[in-house]
Length: 232
Ligand code: BT5
Image 1 (cartoon, rainbow, N blue to C red):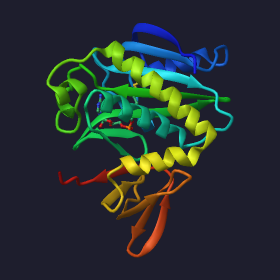
Image 2 (cartoon, protein in one colour):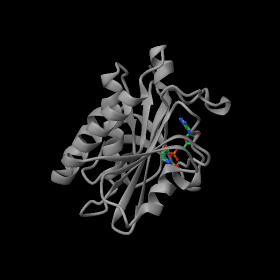
Image 3 (cartoon, protein in one colour):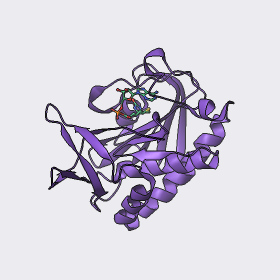
Image 4 (spheres, rainbow, N blue to C red):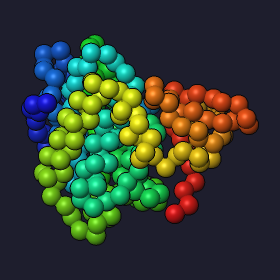
């Protein structure tokens, strides 16, 4: 993949900026901002994006719109972290965690035939007060700041590789996520608007869904927020 990187100092949200470029843009366009004033997570949740973090969106035009695309982002982040000596795990469907703290989130959105894949990764940024218990950064994990340019370079390299794998063989991407999630066998609560499920994770199926055992019944969850107690 040839990446064409647009660099901004400040933007509301790189996903919003990228969306406005569509359709007059080619696949592989990347929007990176030093800070976002209205960074977003899923369901309109706020994403803290102070200076020092990596906030970016890549524009893709896959032959099909597929929920498994989000795994491409999570795998690329986890490979990048590994290169810097940080062990991370993937929390289905779109988070990357270091121990019991979130370091990265991926937000995929669709516009026409395009997919905007937003990746937020805490690198050298301060973690805001309300998130100190639940979030971490590469700087915190390593005890020193890292070269954010190098982080971006690695991340784009791995995004290109995993996107290629996704295009060729999507179940391979899922298999890799299965191996990098700590959720299998764990008791989890899946927060589904007003209708939570509590069960044990059996697996992530090839179509990307979370398969749970809920009181002996097998339940398939296509999308949701997982909360899990991690004993490490
Ligand atoms: C996500 O949503 O994890 C997807 C985050 C995607 C952010 C990127 S940054 C570039 C691009 N442009 C955007 O506007 N967005 C994308 P979700 O699973 O809904 O998680 C959101 C939750 O994560 C919040 O409710 C907070 O609890 C927590 N959170 C917010 N900011 C955080 C941060 N910087 N680090 C760790 N956790 C954070």
